[in-house]
Amino acid sequence: MQNLEDHALLHEYVECGSEEAFAALVSRHVNKVYSVALRHTGNPAQAEEITQAVFVILARKSRGFRKGVILSGWLYHTARLTSVTFIRSELRRARRQQEAYMQNVANESSTDTWPQIAPLLDSAMADLNEKDRHAVVLRFFDQKSMREVGDAMDASEDAAKKRVTRALEKLRKYFSKRGVNSTTAIIAGVISANSVQTAPAGLAKAATSAALAKSGAAAGSSLTLIKGALKLMSWMKAKTAVVAGVGILLATGTTTMVVQRVIAKSREPSWADDPRNWAINSKVLDSLPTAFILRPTRFANTGGGMTSGKRQLWRNQPVQTLLAEAYSMPAWRTVLPTDLPRGRFDLLMTLPDHSKELLQEEIKKRFGLVAHKEMREVDVLRLKISNPNPPNLKHPASDKGSLWSDGTYNSDKIKLRNWPIGDFMRLMESYLEEPVLDETGLNGRYDLDLRWKAKPGESERDAYRRALSEQLGLELVPDRAPIQMLIVEKAN
Image (cartoon, rainbow, N blue to C red):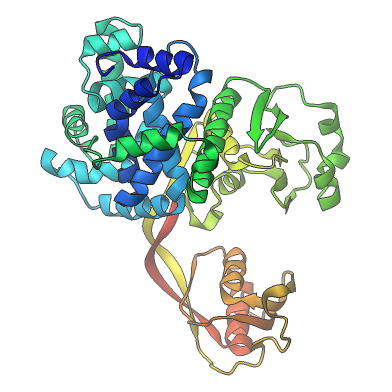
């Protein structure tokens, strides 16, 4: 069985139910899958759980594979998506820290390159198109010759060489933008030498047993992981279809829905022509059908926007606003290119999920812009206590705790009930349009009243800071500090 090609083993399993064939596939690819998971988690036990989940997914989806599927590339992609599902927030934090460190690293030797690119490798691979990713996996993860890569991809050896070369150059550019300066030859060498590690003894057998068992036999955490990974895979497939056309199908839970998607010169659905459906009104927004619409503005004399749950509507907004919504980062924490596209736009997103990712794709396609988050030293305001007993900052008198909260605020006053200081700080950032770091040490929730009015010769900003000190016992101290920023740049 071990000598048969992947497609032959897969055929044996799908058509004949051969557990021996499936076990041979697991044994052949388990090291690669485990290594992807281990790079993401840094935790061998978590990597083992992810590995088992990947092969459970293989067992479930193998009967629906298209003809000629490259199993090695599919397993790599599935391992990455499953790992992302498992530890997404931790991965992002680790990547930000690594990228910040990379800013100070240059001219590294090949022996130092792998520790630098390892935290970035799988995100870089995700940036490749499917054929390029398959070529890299076959060549450097599976150690195939160029002829074997060409055979697997139904191409000549020369075509395989060109594809691998182009893919390596894309990886080099990706790493270079994140501070890892190296050559394609060194990158190829370190990926080939380090990307696949030996999985723990017994993992292949455990993964085979988990995949071939009935779904009810899996642990609750594993079932949750598998469902989450399958949902992410469905979204990734749908997102690929989005880029190709106007109409898309999105799998959301167990429900399939048609999403109306409109770009600059596409014909809009009839209801989108009615200005009343673009009203800044939550009831109107909640009543609109599922759609994604991005168009040049038709509200030149008015603007604004609103959010209702996951639904968003914006009128007459610049590209900066689109970027802020797409990447969930306010404008004052964004570094923009000097030649940012001009123009103003209307945006309507009423999808139940994944609208941020869809907007990112549209911004890349329409404006040629992408963005990533990294640590940068910038001007900040440190929020500190100046008076421990202020008149207008008190703990709530009610014992309702976190079950209630409310607030009103406009251009010259804020009145909040049962709010955490952290939420007030974010409100403060939006008014001052400058990053604020909370160094008050205040915990719990507070009632606060803040009113300000500029004196003769005093700016509104200075009046706000004076009221903050006098009424809430808080002061803002200018400083510089490294914080997470959104870096917007031209797409390759």
